[in-house]
Image: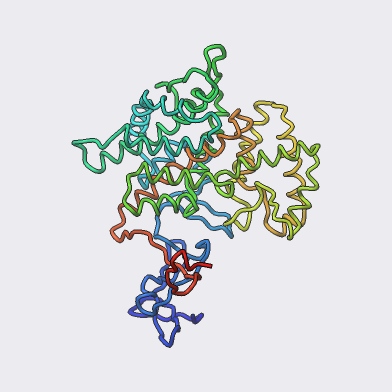
Length: 438
């Protein structure tokens, strides 16, 4: 493909010469100036496809939800910097922004909050499902199954318009997923399930459902509630990542919203995606077992011949400091100072952070602490069990998944996602009867 571009009928194009043919491909420009080459007609015109493992250079959709610039460390939801939302907004308001495309009025926010409260309870029969899961089952596997089951417990509503029904589905998911997560934790401990309270906010309700007991009432703290708000705001969307792409891909088959979200939860489960904050704590535990000496771990991370990765450092997209990490670090400092907790893992984490920020290798390779590093520490300080870290991530990412599914569902140019491949198997051969096989 030539480096120069032309204009065709007033539009910028790129020239591709392949297989003896010369074709003009339209250049698409985003609202922030980013450019892409539209190859949607490439196969029809040339018989060729593009090859891009991991889709690092492939734009799968046009989206008006989230903008991120990995080179400059920028993240915005619907044009609003995430720094402003973390400082001034709440998770509920941010969810409304992502899903509906604008900040709500007081009346809209109140109505949204009322719907979240109205749909916060979970069908009592679902407790049977929870109790029948093996005790060793990972919470993410349980959550994925339970979200998929929601469609059966809450079938299609009759007499509502599509918009009205979607609003109910959205608030059901946002509210019930939080309740199911807390319920599964309580059941895993053999404790009495704590029901949501009408007088508490979204985040306060979750903390109360998680940690309140008849013998030791949970003392709600504004700083800790704010910390959870910020954690979920920072995780609410992140452009076309693995789990979001899974939601869009599955949703392109026109499955129901619950099934698409279930697919996103499963994709998020991976240690290279949503499981990274859990992996941070597990790495810190290994360092603790090693006597607290993290130097061998740093040495392994620098060794190009060693596949070991220092979890919580660096990012696939951000080539500078993760903007979410800067915010989460401040939250981390506030939470640790408030709780005054003595935890050897947290001490190791703070020492590791100090060394990595000064080490030339980490600085030169842009291996700064990312949001997973600080969020893992904050969740541990809040008392969230390690195996529920990814569940916490999933609750936060839910409004982004919903917004992305909705945007794709409403796209008049929607297409069923069906990637191509380069086949590398054997050429045509013929069936050999079993008695003639060597």
